[in-house]
Each structure stands twice: as structure tokens, then as C-alpha cells.
Length: 229
Image (tube, rainbow, N blue to C red; front, top):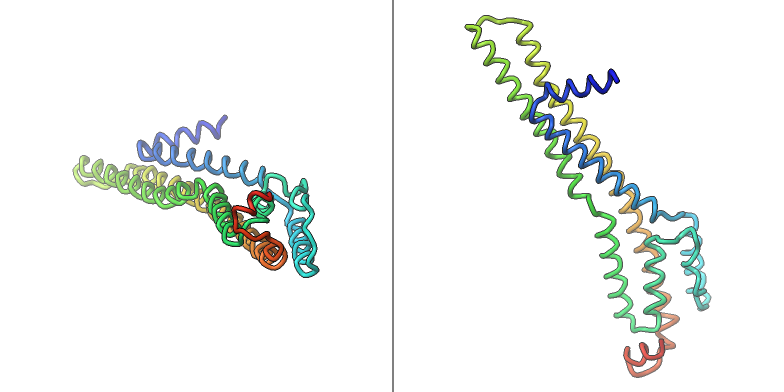
């Protein structure tokens, strides 16, 4: 309870700017929680991913069919890897251009979902310290105004107390910025790694399609291919 009262006291001493920074921190915390839930529910074991990738490469080299359930493993469930695999099997008998376009649409859609909230976190990381600086400047102005009201005589207690209160907003602004930036960097790293995995898998699947599937396509273009499916 003492910690809570101390926190409330700090917020009050920071005044209006501090409440704005606190609001930004709550928004950043909510965005981080939402992204954490998303990345947990869509996670996949990279060991299994590399095993599947190796299996695709082996099938490509040996000119064998890919098992229909190769991307249906529980370790890949609800992941971006499973989504890419579903696109491949949906367009596996289509022309190469159609498959590549489908891959591109899927990856762009997945990237948009993975990076949701990133702009918000980066903006908070940039704005919070500036608000903290603003609160400090206005706090110092108030402290020196009090000194001026005393006729210019320097009261150390008044001056130090005013500066101490003014610095609170700088601290809260930096804490909010550091948290937002750290969360942004963490999730951006995870997203970038997933995009690399998707691109690596798509490269193998495109080669597999070009050499193994396309040669077996019936004549008549994409229309006949879609009818066959």
C-alpha cells in the first residue's frame, strides 16, 4: 500500500503532463499485451520448421510429391508457416505467376497483422520523453516564479523542492519511452525472423512448383488448371 500511495503522490506532483505520460504508458502496456498474446498464439517451433523445410528440399531434389499434411503438424498450427503451406496446396496446380502472386498477397497480409501496433509503440517511444522534458521545463518555470515572488531571495528548500518535482516528469517520460521502445524492438525482431522463414520456405516451394508441378500441368492455361483442382 505504501508503494501505491507513493506512486499516486508522484503522479500528483508531476501534475497534468505526468497524467498524459501515464496514459501513454497504459496504452503502450495494452498494445504490448495484445501483441504478446498474438505472438504466443501464432508461435511455432523453429526446429520443426527447419525439419519441414528440409523435407521440402529433399522432395524437390528427388522429384517426389509433398505429403498433403506436411504443414498440418501441431507445432505449426495457426502459424505463418502453415498459412504459406495452405497457399501452396491451394495453388499447386496453377501457373507459376498465380502461385507467386498468391504468396505475395499472403505474406503482405501476414506482415500487416504481425506489425499491428508497431507504429503506435514507436510514436509513444518518441513522444513520451519530449512530454517529460516539457513537464520539467514548466515545473522549473513554476519554481523560479515562486523565487521571483519571494523578491528574488533564494530559498534552497523552495528551489530544490521545485526542481525535484519538475524532474519527475522526465523520469516517467523516460520509463515510458524505454518500455515502449524495448517492446517494439522485441516484437520487430520476432516479426523479422518470421518473415525470413516465410521467404525461405516460399523460395523452396516456388522451385518445387517450377520444376516438379509445372511440367505436369495440363495444356490450356490456368483455367484448365483450376478445373482440375
